[in-house]
Length: 307
Picture 1 (cartoon, helix red, strand yellow):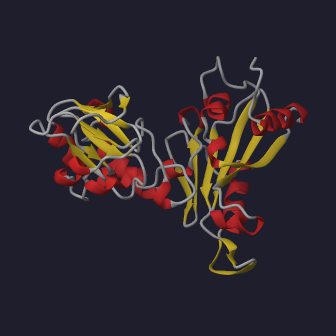
Picture 2: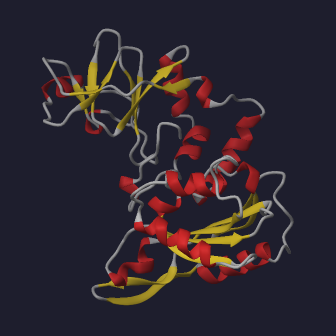
């Protein structure tokens, strides 16, 4: 019903129109589109919004080297869809780290780490031919290096293979019996974006060390021209860039209201904010955060406040 649509989305829709019942579409798309809100709602959303006669069979994350020779380092994924009324009970997710070659100058050279794609293709064939049992009980790993797994389709909220990273799955399983979900301890605050005024501190990611200590004297002297997010005493700020490198802190009551750069998420803790900060640094929590994120490089991978 929209007057305008992303051409890539329109192309996917047209390809699906051309499929016969039972036909498969295999297509390479940018990760931003594969796990973007429009396609995610269409493929995994509630019955009222998703495409009812199309099911996801597989999604395989590809490394930046895959299309580097063509001049792009965008992260891409190979998505497999099937046009059918009956939806599959499982989805195959995989992550290739190596494709057999690397870009060196304007040519390719063999990757000393080899090629993950044959093993992933073999695992995908087993799943799509149903020689592997359904994953009704949760994540089922076909292989771990390279990563290949199946998940129940009914539980899928994203097509990002990082969600089935073995370390993250093991950490989540270890906590499930004794821990509680983090959303019971921490919730995103209303986004308050304003231009810095007066002498309030402005916190960037460079002002926070890996233990959560802030160089407040530097933050008070920092005067960027870009707007920032307002954070209040007792709230937790958490960098949403590069989740492998945790940068989070509590705004102390004696500092008062502060601004922080827009790469942060601002959160309201339930209970003691310093207890929440300690838990964010727990190895089992870090293991779940580390593989997440979208972006072209590890240092620019971004997560969302919901993550």
